[in-house]
Length: 156
Length: 184
Image 1 (cartoon, each protein chain N blue to C red):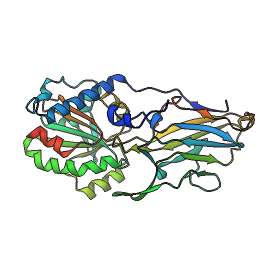
Image 2 (cartoon, one colour):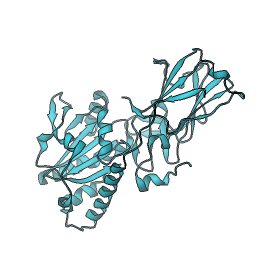
Image 3 (cartoon, rainbow over the protein chains, first blue to last red):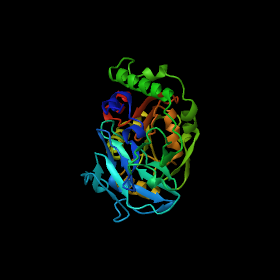
Image 4 (cartoon, rainbow over the protein chains, first blue to last red):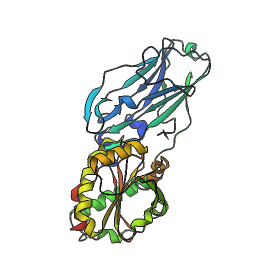
């Protein structure tokens, strides 16, 4: 059952995995990572990082390699950082091609809870891609719920 | 399965949640004047990570290693924050105001930034922060999980009495009016 955002105010902030659950799936042979955003929460667009086998592939908005889908985000006027784009809805990161036979993917994201008035530290999520995985699903689509399966790690 | 995540999760500590609830209840009582402003004396002394915090040293903005014991005997408000945390930055002007207002009554704010030096220096200068800002490493985000902040989020603030007893643990913003209530 999905957590409700209202609990954040009553019981403290949600665990980061519940505030921003990440799911991975293959769509037509392409890897898609979806970061959901619970109501009353948001993710900073410029705080996404993505690495393949430890190599930084730059911002996830980098064209051709991968892209941010869903919506264009909402612009907030941050008194310190100026105009900042945030996502209040699910963010889909689509990796256009995964060439390696064995690949480790690292996703870093950072967000806040408007309802609790707090921010989560940058969260790191690791995925291992097994050889031949792209063809393993009969329909080319194999969603894998990763919620509660990985340990949050902090990066600075 | 084609994609797997590494490794298993750690779940939040329930003891931390209990501490948080205690802190929240105590603040409500303080606001009502239930213990005449000295209700915290009924609380126990710091222990565990909080005790380690009070004996720890942090790098200050001038580069010097500064022990937390510097402020022993003060009503100490320790605020964990970061420049990447919007709510943290939003509450700090109220801290500056409170520090100016209640310093003579023994209030000492200390900000521990879980951040890099450059953005912290820039922000501290912009805001003309009138209390010490120290740099803490990311390990403190783990440590605060046992201090009443089970998710390790920011801002997180501890209010300690002059005898080093915990008066308040706050996950989220602390208001000027709450600080003022301690001294009136």
